Length: 181
Image: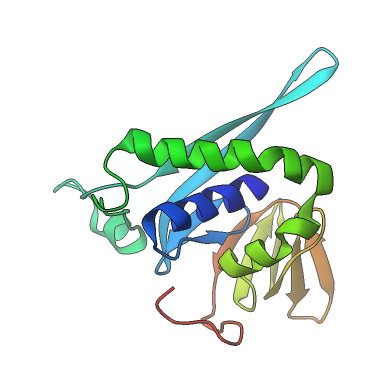
C-alpha cells in the first residue's frame, strides 16, 4: 500500500493530475484504471527482499484495443511542459520511492496518514471485497496503521483486511470529494 502511495504522489507531483489509489495496488484517474503495482517477497537466507513491479498506461491506445478495456482504463497523456520521456516519468517515481522509504521504515503510517487520505479512492465508497472464498460487502473506512483496509460490512461488523480483490459497487463518496477525480 505504501508503494502505491509513493507512486500516486510522484505522479501527482510530476503530472499535476489527481492520480488516486484503489487499495491495495491500483492507480486510478477519473474513475478508471491508470496502472498497477505488484509486489512479491523473496526470502534469501535470513533476509527477505521485496520485488516491486509497476505498470502505468501512457500515451494513446492502439487502434485494436478492445472497447471494454478502453472504457475501464485510462492513459496518462504526455505533457511536454511537465515530463518529456518515459525515463523522466520513471525517474520521478523511483526518486520519490527512494527518498521516502527510510522515513516510512522508521515511522510507519502515522507520517503518511494525511497523504494516503488524499489519494484514497475507496474511502466512503460501497465496495465488494473478495478475500479467498469469502465475499464481503460494505463501506470502506480507510486503512489502519498496518495498511489493512477497514471495511464496515453491510451487517454492521468492522473488518480489517490485509489482502483481497476490491470492486467499487456504489457511487457514494466521502464528504468534499469532487466527481472529476
